[in-house]
Amino acid sequence: MIQPQLSAPVFHLYGENHSWPTPDLIHCESISSRSQLHDWKIKPHRHSDLVQLLFLRAGRADAELDGSAHLLQPATLLLVPAMCIHGFQFSRDVSGEVISLATPLVGQLATRQPLLRPLLREVALFPLENLRQRFETLIGEIAAEYARPAPGRELVLESLAGILLTWIARLNTEPAATGGQPADRGGQHLLRFSRLVEREYRAHRPIDFYAERIGITPAHLNALCRRLSGRSALQIIHERLLLEAKRALIYTAMTINQVSDSLGFSEPAYFTRFFKRLTGLSPRVFRGQQLQTEQREND
Image (cartoon, rainbow, N blue to C red; front, side, top):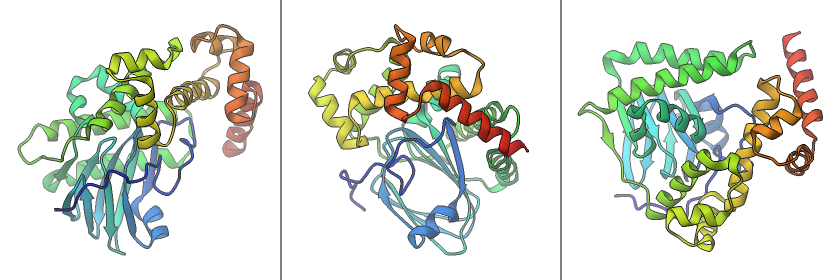
């Protein structure tokens, strides 16, 4: 039995310790694109704010999942919830995809469909066998849509992700699904904090508000956030606000004042200072740069 590494580092994506790089709530890449940069070995680590899906088309992988060793073979689908410690040794002929879903998206989907809620809690391995073609086609569609800028891309990606998670949730009700160990108590507190932030971030609640509802002190909450995510509790709240601000500026026609109001800021000037402090750009400049980038990609 491999012992869980509770001091394992936390990354948003393996090998990158900066904040979520785009306003997209989905990231898709081939297994080989990242693993070959690390000599096909991904050291044990965990994510505080991602649910990951790994689909193995070819090759093999030795996986460490919350203290247990597993052999992954072709046509296996692995679901890794937030806070699960996971690491891989891939064969050099590996082929497949890794789809990372930010927990705000998974939380929104789970709110609409309770069947998805267990996917936030446990590791699950699925040998697809007769269902391989069905899942392979859907995952291929996600990879293709992710790779190309096109009108309605965000809606298509989130819809496809919802279908994929629903199919997996159905598999998860079958006896063949295997679960991992639940997250440690600190991880459970952080997950609860993340869910509260998702519900309350527009209200600009103080840290005391969250700590009281979790049943711990503000100092303990901050310590947990720093230990398990590398960020303070306030940084996590601000990153969620910033993510939604970026999404509104890119994907909607709302004015700066309307975006500010929708995110609970008392004054547009305060929203502008907040946004510029975290990005180095004013909301207006950020929107203009994104529009220019989109125009170049469509030319």
